[in-house]
Image 1: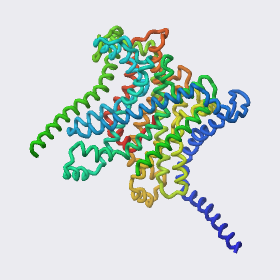
Image 2 (image 1 turned 90 degrees about the vertical axis):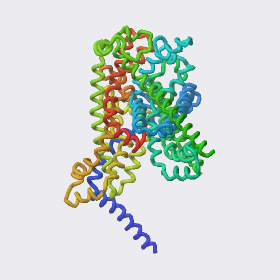
Image 3 (image 1 turned 180 degrees about the horizontal axis):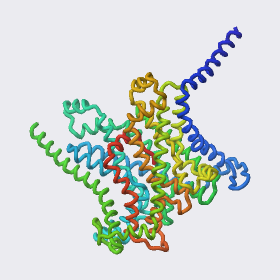
Image 4 (image 1 turned 120 degrees about the horizontal axis):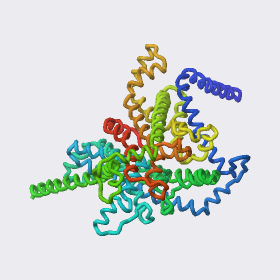
Length: 310
Length: 290
């Protein structure tokens, strides 16, 4: 009995490795094509990820031997007010970006969908997508100029209306709103076009049926168009959520000493700690914690989406 | 009664359409006016660009701003660096990701699921999260303060690989099989059959990467500290953000600042209208990153 069992197992084993080898021989050229990507991913994604974690549990020395530190750095994070401030800013700025971006993108898509003149529709689409092509530096440059305290367009207009001028870029009161505005301005067209594409996939029969039932235009939008966008919204919101949590450039460019309290986000804090102050071990711990937070929030988001689906 | 309500409805509809178009024009204006302002200021004279009026047309037309930019700010070197990394980076990125995507689009090899997962997972590990170990690795590879650092970063991304994989998978298998029976080798198949058919996909991916590389910023901030190796975005930040916020030694007029912005956005504006449909199809195929 056992003898037979053993034999079966063995033959299975051989056939497994045998099939691996024959698969490898048969598809040599495919595996050859995958070698560069395999090496690249190991070297530039997996190894740094692993090394980052190792550094975070060391007292990392730039020169010489590093010693183990256990969870000391992670404990330090708990009482590091600067970290909590940057996390709060990440959530406030990111949350606003997510919220306003979502509203504007969906609204624009719905409104554009009502435009019957195709040329006009295309024209608006073309224009509103352009800001998404520009770098954060270029966008910041444009708006620093427009919002400049003395000769900027907006402050000129305020002055003409008899109001006080505002130094937007150095005002703690205004800077968060400016961040939200710039992000919404940049991403409006991009999201709008994705939603518009999703709209074309909605079955026209649904509208016809609703019309026959006597539903007006607004009712059709509320009960057919918007529900038809749910699947796209889920994906776009999730990608934007992750992007918001990883924000770097916008904050890095627009942070200045007078608003740092409101604009420093976790990723720029990591940069400052690790690559300016060279506290690489502690900065790595912060990066690992942030990866964890992103993971948890993504899972939580998917959990909520699944719950609401039922 | 019924007829009356229908007339009301079409009237309401008309009003809605007018308001709608007005609103959309306002949105369009919010995107066009800042651009117009930027272009106008860049072509204004030094004095004209600093005068306190709302500028939508060049004030005292001149190219002083551009002259300052090239002679005093010495923007030529960063521009050349940017062109180098954009061309080399886009070329390497597209070729490597296409090869990988092509291999992954094949159906009959055993480790397909492993490799797909292996590459997908890398999308969860962007530069931001691994900048410190990556910095140390680049240091060992002598890539710090080299333009190669920017070319190598994100040379292969899960996003592009998956885009190309999906694209190749949408090409009918029968075409490849026919050529295979005629005795074509795997690489022949790729270059003679699949690549010509994948041109729209290649165009999309190339354009996205071109924009990405031209606009790259974080890589430069992290890996480059030698001013000779600065690329355009970093130089531009020094010009429009830093010189504005703090009191730097040299005062830079607004027309020069805006000229810098114009140089940074003009290549993108030039390629966009011609290739818009590829941009759109790319957006449909996938999504984006921060």
